[in-house]
Image (cartoon, rainbow, N blue to C red; front, side):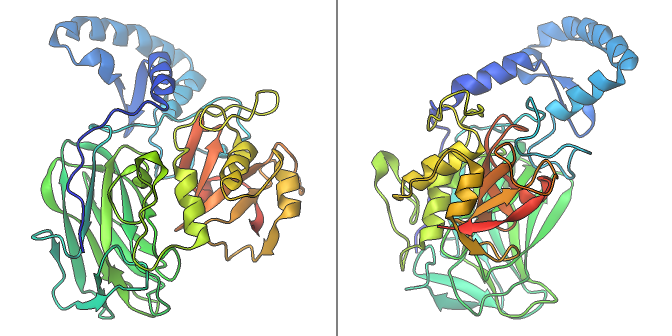
Length: 395
């Protein structure tokens, strides 16, 4: 099995102008409850006095206007905020973006580590399995049914900041429904329980985390309690930023390389995972309501436009209307969406689907890929932060 080396920052044209525009508009950002000036204007020591004077001018305004202070705080909140902004759904219902999306300290940086990466994987007591025909990232993966036994992946974090972490495991009926992944962050290890019976043979998002610079065992896997089956440790990927796409890492098995060439993982991939992979190539595309604006792939998309253009890649002709999309799909149990399914939300909470409600593409582990007015772009976020889950459709 092979795994890629850390990838140096690359030049990324799509979305650069959009992000620059947002950064120019937002001079102040908030992280962890403290206010600091944008990095573009605070890096020079010679500006300390100017920053202090600007802070003195801003503080009275904040004190006089609680609403403005709340607005500023929300705008700088990370995409993986620990809790939903009270009373605000993260779909299409808002009229302007409420949250900024960080590209992290090293835009374009990524690293893949798998169980065969020399010196970067430890799993005492775990069994090595052959991955052929099951969608593993290479020839082997590690597996255990022993509660508390941990496998660890060593990764390189080039600079302290926010990083997105993805995991890969093969498809197998014996996988655990309650595997625990722990990511080492600036505030300690953050754990998340993942159902490995779904999402096999694809990159599954664990979340975005603030991580400390260094070379260390940052991701660990263990068997959880309350489930059955065996925990699997195959591969992890760490990327700079809160909304980085794992599918842009050329040369890694199972992702789409530059020029449209597809490099298949062992055993191939399911249709649903291919839909997710295609949808992730749209991450960062500007949110614009259509109509009245045109539905323009990679340039201007709202929620139903996003699902339309992604489905079009697979020969599915869907209208730019979420109600019509709902009526055309095959019914799926609301509690059992699979990666690649369309998931719908009665975001207005009026008991019926309307064109102004919300739709996205389920990507596994409770996440969806969707064009979000809340973030002002196409993102991959937790579906629980969107009001009024209505159901799922499969095409």
